[in-house]
Image 1 (tube, rainbow, N blue to C red):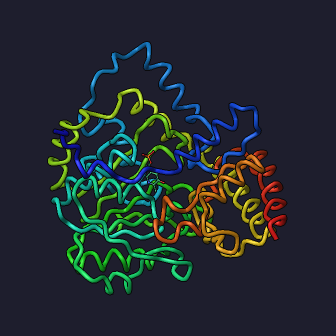
Image 2: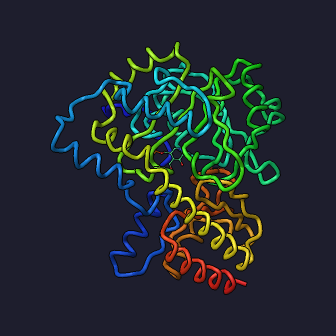
Image 3: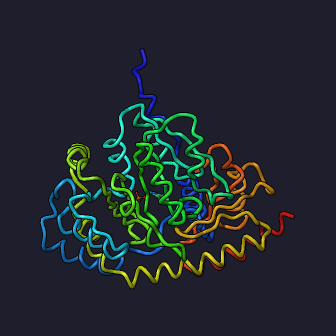
Length: 385
Ligand SMILES: Cc1ncc(COP(=O)(O)O)c(C=O)c1O
């Protein structure tokens, strides 16, 4: 008799990983590949982070840290809230986690019980849905489109068929890069407060915005859970370090969960993260590079006849409607990779229903690659007419 395997383990694959593999195979076969598929900066951790690590390797034992993170890093993150948003978010409300990814599971376990419903915008980052489902929570999709910048609205929340226990928002968002205005952000936050809904705000792309001001839920909603990471603005994806901020009365539960599940975030990564907090000049100059890449790539799509592109207020993504070219974006991306060497992510990861009509392009790779890819892409798109 077969032994059971949990049904909840059968979450969707994160398809961008398949594109990464195909791109890597093409590269190993000697092709020039332009990496517009993956949402990770092409740069290493900032110099100050690497220097801190070099010193710590010889000077420290690097054992376990406290479950919620080192006091120094928690205080450093608290200081960042003062610097970025002018608010007082005490270190006692901050926990260091294994990336934003590690923070999601901890946040969901701390805030919700099995069977609770959590709403999220589609298209959106697929791991929210997959982690919720694996934990026995119900994910409720709010279908969004260009008319609301692919962001949820109070009207959409009012129109939900059933009550919800939580709402996840991301501004800027992955895959669209679009943002909620400060007014819309506050209106959604107030709706959550009025309806007893726990707001979870994924702020991983803060620091990477190109005009629209960022709002942190920590400033407008005392009950919100804020999630952030050193992966994107701080250019430290592989170090696996992020954080979350929660109301004080949830911190003890969080500490117990983290202690049981992972003990702590790797000590060396916490040291690197502390160093990175002061690398403002280096990191801001990376953002300026992304800003230039954004202009180049957006123009390349427009020149190639793609006109419905998300408004890229932040992050480093463009989400483009390619329904005039295909209703199978996976096949389209595979052809583009074969014929031009440009790796692009199909939309199906982010929207299981409409994603076959969309592609996501990431522009956080180096400027020279983006420039060459932009020319090749425009030419390829024009050849399709
Ligand atoms: C919106 C969003 N949240 C979270 C993550 C996960 O980030 P981390 O590397 O901090 O786990 C990503 C990664 O791409 C993301 O786009």
